[in-house]
Amino acid sequence: MNGCPVNVGDLMASGTISGTTPDSFGSLLELSWGGKNPISLRDGTERKFLEDLDTVIMRGRAVKDHIRVGFGEVRGKLLPAR
Image 1 (tube, rainbow, N blue to C red):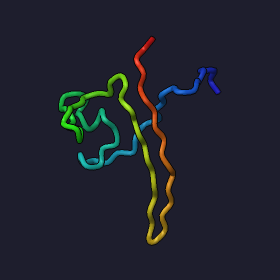
Image 2: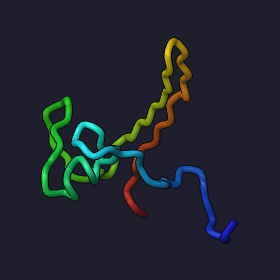
Image 3: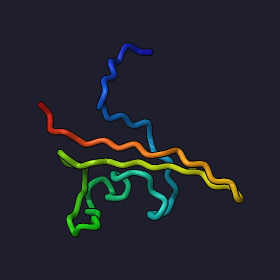
Image 4: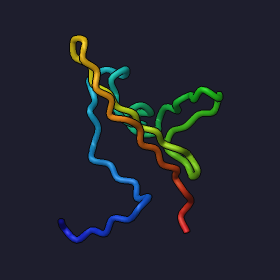
């Protein structure tokens, strides 16, 4: 709408839905306190920020009473800059 070109594979963010406690933070930036505290991954490595060749996977679902709605999965691999 504003003339910004969008291409396949572009990484976009529109914000996060976060709470006030660490278990409700919605982004790596919040979880790592702006890069001050590394996050331990399942394989034992640590990250403060995303790195080249990382794969980001987002899954979503909503549950209310006995009704569940899945929003599927989207994934993308961060490639190094050219």
